[in-house]
Image (tube, rainbow, N blue to C red):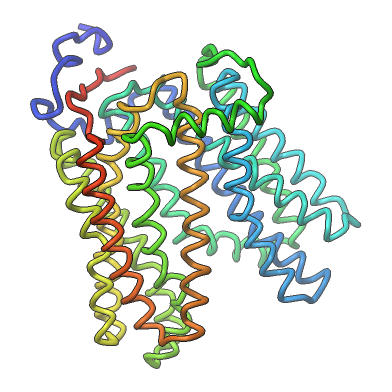
Length: 425
């Protein structure tokens, strides 16, 4: 019996459906291509960030410009995600993804040309960062075509998110090794190959599908109109804020890891532990929730876990040492696993013709609030001790999260009767 025509299983509600597990997602051929392309794109982005930062410093000897190279990876997200979001719905997804990869490859090709001015290097960095939310939002929307709108989509999103989190742990190490062997431009050259390989995988490993919506107005006007439609819906607005608000405050200890390590008298190795603890907690919790909990249970834990996810930061009031700090960060990271259920809600609520724009806006905003949260934490630490800043982030973030949870309940943000999707092969 074909798994794609199991009507009984497809109609089962999440409370009756056991978790399918991550293995079911990898049985989908198109997803395997998307997964491989995601790995290659991540490698390209991480290595190019490190190598370009080193290259800019070698050319200018300016710590400010070197740091600005990293900052430019976050700042354009909101602009690109707002002004170009309609690309995700207006054009076929495969074409958008391939063209985005080819534009990034072209930018990298210019970067590696000897004599490229520093201003041009930074401008190309901005362009790659502006493209990123369009690529990510389009890919997220395309997953609903590849995996359906039920549990497989949630698990597929989870896998890509886990890979991205893991890149934080391993990516800088890989970049450091490459820079020990190659020059900065040589390392950047490798990323040219990763973008081209990603484009080839997406072009030949996924199916051509029509665009979700017809383009009528000018691109930017249509993007802004889509943003207004997305935020005008009270349920979608509440769901997007559930993605954004806890994330904005959870990054405070990461932004202040170096000064806190110095405050407690810990060394460089301890700083590495503080930086890794939260991603490790998130990856472990997300893997467990995705593999062990049913779709119904994942949906039920969204609001209570979102409300409580920042409570571990209250422990910073006691100026914890290294061991307790790592534990608190692991717990805070684990709290982020509520997003599996939230992904389930989001795809069930957003109309198909707005899906690409909504997902582009959501991912662009997610990166923007992380940058804003880090900046605000750093600013606050100029006036108060680090442990008080982290505690304050936990208190303010928890209050806002609780208020947001109450609004989500009033808005009916949880879909009433989501359905599980069949396994596709």
